Image (cartoon, rainbow, N blue to C red; front, side):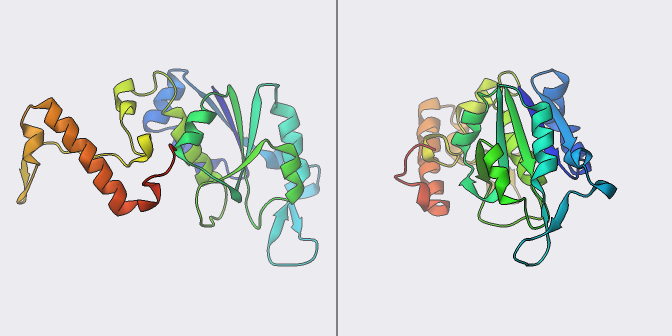
Length: 224
């Protein structure tokens, strides 16, 4: 898979690409990730990419042209272009599973007061990571990239993906490690029993309990 991230602030993402599982996935050629500064595509003096909003209002608006020129430079018939915008559809685990099937993703990071609305004529979909507003699209780009890359074959063990939060529309069960007792808090006895059937039943019950307590909106919903 190839992921191109269009941003005005590539330095915000360099640490993300050089640590942990993402770095290993790149090193092992499971994925190629490029940071593209679309300021380089502006035709205006002083590398200007934004201007005041028609109709007035606070802040500056990013112009379409630099982004569209960047898209025209890197797009192929296999590309799928995503605009990161709080007005987009909400990103969920099922979207990560869907997007990992594309060979080439292009993520567009907005900034300031946003991007000229006409950019939506040049993208395939608009995605939001949650019901809140950030200063730019770089954090959403990292979140989406991370959630997709970890699902690619060979990036992490298949066993780690067998049971996770949001599988079967449930949050994941709690996990424990040594020591058996920490400052008076003990590991549930069933996990020490060696009875795999009982452990499986306990974990299933815990998934249901935690989901009901913390995300009742998921209970009875369709698979996400």
